[in-house]
Structure formats: structure tokens, C-alpha cells
Amino acid sequence: MRRRFILILLLLFPLVTGWGASIHEIEKGIYRSIIHSLFLHRNVVKIWSDDRQKEYLLTHIGGVVRTSDPADADILFIFHRIDVKAGKPVFVGRYSLFSVYGNRVIGGFYWQKGRPNLIFLRPGLERWGMKITDDLAPYVRQRP
Image (cartoon, rainbow, N blue to C red; front, side, top):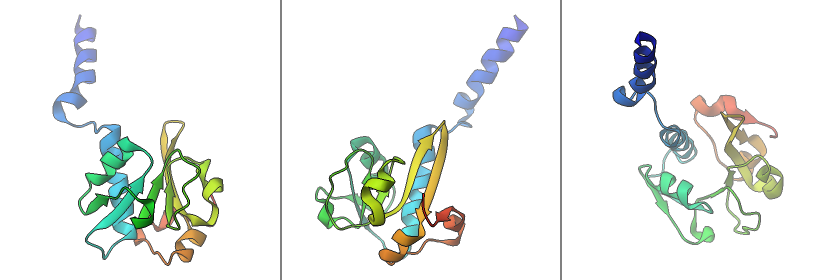
């Protein structure tokens, strides 16, 4: 009986105290860092995404607004589609999309084996004339 009570208490503790953040809150925090790092001196960043759930998450970050036309966006967040032709910087949500979008990709954030992976590609950042803040510099690579 006592073991069962302790087990229930341990399982409910994060929910009651708010100690355990949801995956969405973790992702939102990571995307907030990414956007604010890439667009440090911008008050408003226009984004386009092919995933409605991620788009909803992204537009709930301060200073981020959605656009329905990829050509009007400052950055494209692509998670599924392989046919977006707008000449804008691309941030991918799946590892396989790095090769699809080639030198347009500035980075990616995706989950693999239950762990978050964040990568910025130096050639893409240089191509688009983008810089990131020092706190994200350890995630910069030459290739994925």
C-alpha cells in the first residue's frame, strides 16, 4: 500500500507542481531561441510553415507572424513538403529534408530516438548572410 502511494505521488508530482514541461513547451522554447537568434534586431519575423500545428506553435512566440505565401516570409519552416520553390532561407523539421533543400537550408530541429537535435549549417547561414548568437554557436556545422 505504501509503495503504491509513493509511486502515485512520484507520477503526479510533475503534473501538480508544473515541474515537468510538455514537449510543446520545450519545442516552443527552442524555436523561440532559434528565431530570436537569427533575427536578433527584428521586431517582427514573418514565417511560413507547411505544418499547421508547428505554425500555431511558432506564431505564439512574441514577434512572430504567419504569412500564407512563402515568398512573403522571412524564413520557411518545412516539416513535410519537398516542393516549396520560394527563394527563402529554409529551416527543416526532418533530417531527410536537409538533402532535399540543399544550400537553401540554414538549419534544422528534429527529434531522433526521443532526443532533440539542433543543427545550423554554416554554408546556409553564410549564403543568406545570417548570423546566430553565441549561445547557439556550438550547434553550427559544415554539413548535417
